[in-house]
Length: 218
Image (cartoon, rainbow, N blue to C red; front, top):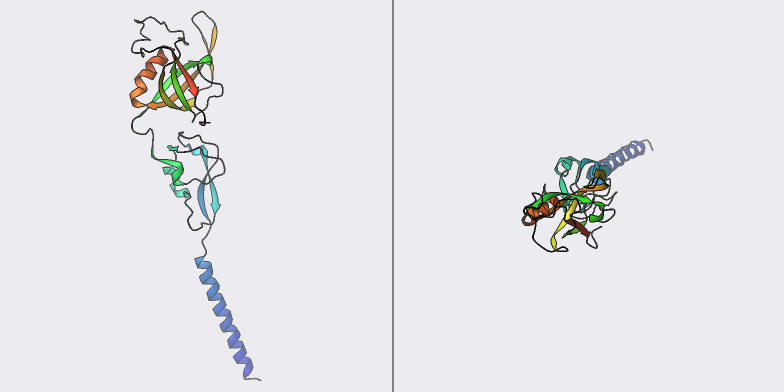
């Protein structure tokens, strides 16, 4: 009996060592939690992603996971969303345009619009038609030699100048109209095709631009 006990003790110690070694191997192969980027607030399609639009989540990586790691956060801010980004969703490379800023062939145009020249609750990311209203909504003169109308498109009211993406809509401000009446004015930044930028800018300066939201762009 005295001989068996050292053997049993040695065998038990060997089992403990083997189990410990196996546990260390398994633990070494198990992925550790890592930090990834998620969407913190809704971002419309076409809008640039701001630092406040993303947040950090900690999770264990899984095979095939395409989430963007926290270390690449500096490469995310300023790129545009290729589709509407919902809060709480993981940010993946396909959610973002390849480059920062405006795509080639696009231009950013500012428009000043009266309350009757744009739909209610217009928001960034919506796709709109830029239409010649023919109303001179900002009070600009409609005479052909007016500096405000020089270069404006010579088309009938109701003509569509181009399709555009709303980048931002300012908080409304009150301004005095030509007759002294108070008028609410919105400043809307539009991303338009580069070839249409001059026409949109000239028509806006003349107060002859209206916006119509296209279905499915909310």
